[in-house]
Image (cartoon, rainbow, N blue to C red):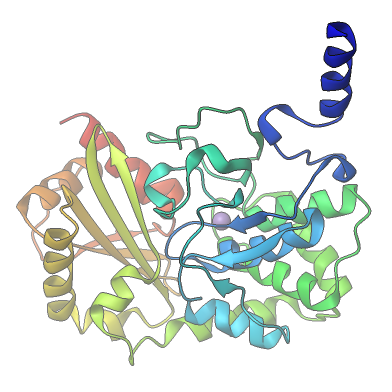
Length: 338
Ligand SMILES: [Mn+2]
């Protein structure tokens, strides 16, 4: 009797992963009825599109933690589809994460013990989500999460619809800044071309330039909205650190509003109880970062991070365009060395 019970238990769990972790290789092993895919807070185009790709490939629902940004809205319109729905509450779902792995970027209502998979292209960093269970992870040093998902779709022989492939292309172009970012890999170019072919996008570069333009006109947004539109919280050496970025071809338009930004940055730092806050007006035309900060503590970190005396009220860094590769790591190092 006992023996057959054990036999049954083994049979019942055979083929499934421990703790309900998602099987990214054999889809028939998964029960996805209650699965929701979600990306990081302040969703960017890669997060907003990767949840759609993931739900197409693995099943489950695609969701956002907040409104799609202007660039993502342009991509969805261009590709003839709707943005995923914004979901206020993620509790009581199985959760697949795309495009991040840091606890500081996780929607508050997600219970870490409900996470079943992570598909990402970021460093594990200083505050990876702590989970009691083992989950399936597919983390690669590629330029976008969408590239990883495009590769997985191909491997699993899943045909992506035209509009989904189009959005996937947009996500790769967004994260790699049309292949200009130092994070770009050969895989990003290869899968962008494959997705463009499926989508019937003839001129990848033209699509990319239209995206850059779409995200560049921020004149009708408030400074606070712009500060948090592409914003990430980090934890470096136990300190709460925020880094907002506005990538734009029209940097001067924002630099002209620097007083507004100083006020918004100071107010946000206080309201969020942050130890440090930085905001980069990233000039994608001239490939340079224009960094603003809230107070002297932030300024001192920047000075250490980029090894220079700061004399003006904006730190201009030529050749710096990536938060992930350049701005974030330099600030992290400086704070850890304090
Ligand atoms: Mn990404």
